[in-house]
Length: 477
Image (cartoon, rainbow, N blue to C red):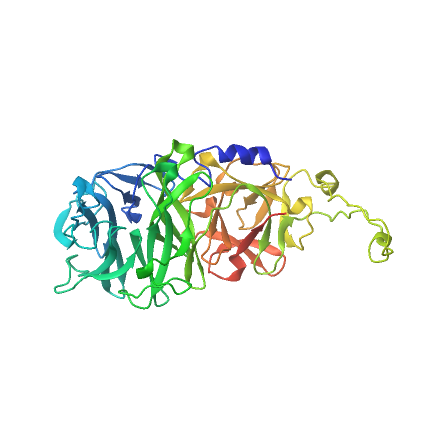
């Protein structure tokens, strides 16, 4: 039932769901992605940036002040604060580092509010102490602003800044919170502070072993420990994501909170073998399990049962049920020593007998591994995507019958796929690991719609409210 040839072709393309992101997503050490004036921005090592209108197609953007290494950015009120390492990191042979802050009221170079104002240095290292002041990362939590920084050359440190000015609070001294990591990020959730950092080796293309790990604490200044109780000051860290497929060396975590229980994170892969081994921007779903962050994954091309979390029912065509030939004597009435032999699954030709030629209604039913319940799902490369998630087409496997959003907010299976907006679907992984399914055609509504299970048998499109009705699983046959 799987279209293996199509899946193999997708794996070779640079803009698939696994490789992610179209355009020119070439960057190293990306900052947290942030929105300004309806566009998305991220900066990396060096003066350059990437910009996107939708979070899927990226192009080279404006330069920022200072150059240097591994910046981060945060919005507080009407200001965007930028932290960057102006020196350190072994540049010019030393680890005398200096982290500067600047701010602007817009990130759009065409805006009259786009002007960088230097705040000054908020952290530094002498080159002789056990720290290298580069790789800054912001966290605003409970009204307080924190900045972590550091690399493998010594400790990771944290200092507190003034959220009104971006300057370091008078008298605030740095606190050591981790070792054996760099490119840190900070999160705050459910009373926990999380320190994410990159372990492994960098800057060696497909030979880089970068991987992102995490520890947590009830205090922003630590102590941070991992899931088995090893302190990060002793090299601990729970794995969040490592290299996969043809992308090697993920590093530089940046949280993207989409809302409605959808969180994602940005990173770079040290090497994408489908893009000449270059360092690229990538975006993945972020899940939470037992209050620990875990990397999710965009749905890959394949054939699936689409299962309702509410009822366990399978999304299916509303067609007559075709029985499989069966001799009851070969089942529970058969003798213990009787011969056994495999029975083939019902074929598509057998299961599709009597299907209407036109549009077919869609409902939910008990999953029986039948043709009317098998959905072939593939990312539509030319349709683009939204914030790291591609648009997909969803058709009955072996046919061109496409899941379609209707004007009366139901779903039906049209006789053919046309590529229209009502046949393109966002499939976003929620923080609990289930998925939300949304038609592209509703995105311009004041309240976009998502696929919902009403009772045990009725799928409709409704405004998402976070209930179990809107949660779906994709199960392989």
